[in-house]
Length: 425
Image (cartoon, rainbow, N blue to C red; front, top):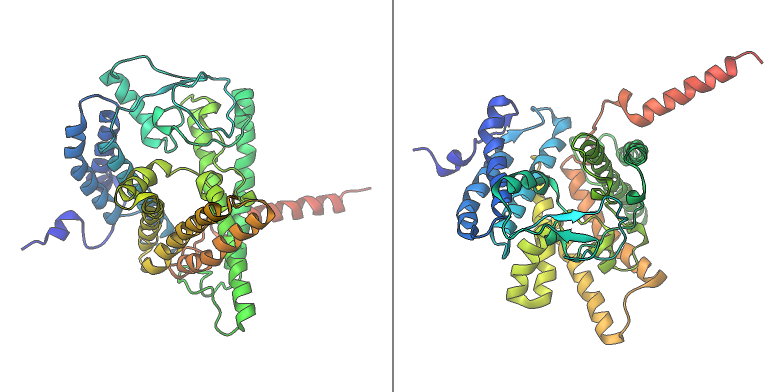
């Protein structure tokens, strides 16, 4: 008898092809897209709830079946990215299934300059499309934007989202694209430099796809944890740079090819290194791509059961699930205790800040707040990065050594310098 598990997905991942794409990924995307259409329409709540199990089943099959690495160990990080995307699809579909009112597009002013204030529905600078119910054709067109618009820029459900300061609204499209391309080149070089520096600490262990721990037991404790902290900080910068890198690529893609306005692509981060509290770091300075998901699927249901404390813990538990399943896709184990532990400790840190404010009347802020924030984040991030290292994520090489951006840059500078030295004077 065929087991139910084998009906859901094959026992081993299968390489991406036209056939496997149409069999596994396409049903997940089509059902997700259908949810994006329905959430804009009135009187669709029952249909959305009924469609949700189908969407989640299709998402599970896609995330657990496809192999974007084609069996090449050095490209397992692509499966990591696939599962992150599929889990995000699942979270958003769940949020849409239980949305209390239809989502509506906001008419963004082309020359609007974004600032760090929270977005407010129906503000003078953002006007809702004046329709009672979004027509079906319009909803289908809007769903293309909704399916990739994680922060809700230009939608009414993004109320309360804090947007980092930006001058993109004052630039022409060509100036904006040139600025974005410059950022893309910088983030590409920075990402390659920090990831390479982290791998160079131990190329044979965690610096390779075989993986290994960042805690060197042969070193005395002070040297061991100083070394692991440096690796952790380098890996944290690597994560920041790769997220920015991908965001700049999508910015150019959607502005250039799909004619979106630069105002639809405000900055992703708000200088997280300047955070003077964990509340500020996680609340708005770190990217807010999953804000809707974590609130709708984690914070809101947990807050119904356990109040505000439960809401904070619920948001971080869902974040832990996202990161755990991504690591598990590397096929080296997901280290759930470590991954969930990191996010639980971040939630506890936010609760401690709340207790501090209640008992002292003062917010965590200033230089001491900055010191507290980075000590708390980096302390627990040591164990999180160790989990990354053990599954081979830190050791993943995104390009062959000879074609790494920093290597190419060094070769170019050497060649240019040789030309200058050999030229007649």
